Length: 183
Length: 183
Image (cartoon, rainbow over all chains, first blue to last red; front, side, top):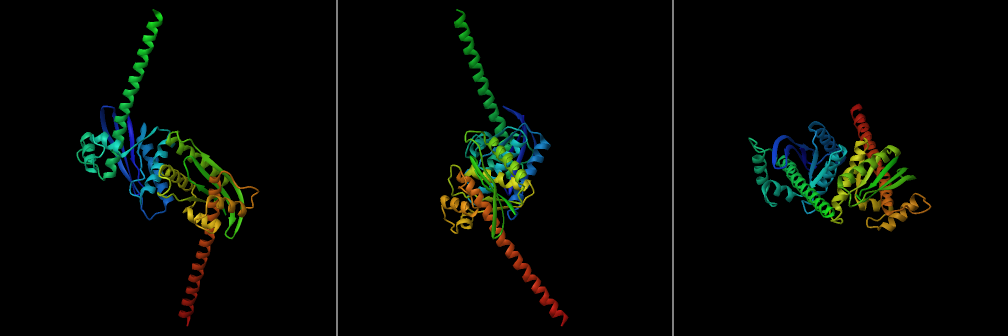
């Protein structure tokens, strides 16, 4: 499974591509930060983000896209731009025909560090360890995007196990019913 | 000048196309509301909005796009979705190569009613009167989008006058300089 994780932002938007299967992380394929200047026109900034994300999806051919959810209690001065960037990020996945999943910041932190209240340094440190990198990815926005992709791979595993369990239960129930009716 | 105004929203996104020149409003070309269901997947909702706006731009061939600005003090439960929709709306104009302008709600209200604190009913009533419509546009989201387009046409007038004044001043300064140097 190859996942493209996005930490949305207007000035800096982190992108990380990770390969792996639930329970076993593979390798870090690529990471980057898409930037734009705060004094640029908002339409040109969103267009630049849209084109950059479309190019990254085309280059790395992920099977799914994971985007961090934005909350209104974040920095009020920048939250609207971040939300607009997240709309464009989600759209980039949808326009490529890929499944898009969103995760809260605490889901992402918990997935990589075990704690939903971990700080940036802990997230970066765990991302470095989990993917066996020689050095921590820089800047931090990229580390967060990589963490989002890791979260998706692991949560995909949980979902897959839940689906398998539900299927097994359904099969077992059908067998019991078949046994009862054949008596 | 033909302007496509957008009142961004995820559940209901108003769109109004108005023709006119600064100082003289023309006609209401078209209006509609793009809808999606709150229980639908966010990626599919943004994709539907993106495709609908692209189709409306292609159909009505506006020369510019005007979008209402979203503020964080709005309804906190829906503001993130509205901001994401506004990102997609601004992007729709930019992707079509059109100039995109954003206006605050009070700029729009002031442009059509003379008061930045006018209510929805006043805005609808003035839009109906200014465009000489037989009946008020329904639903109200469409009326707001039409008001945004009207605001852009009138503000465009102000900008055009300011530019003309600046140009005239520059020409006059150049003439004075030429007169001084020929003495």
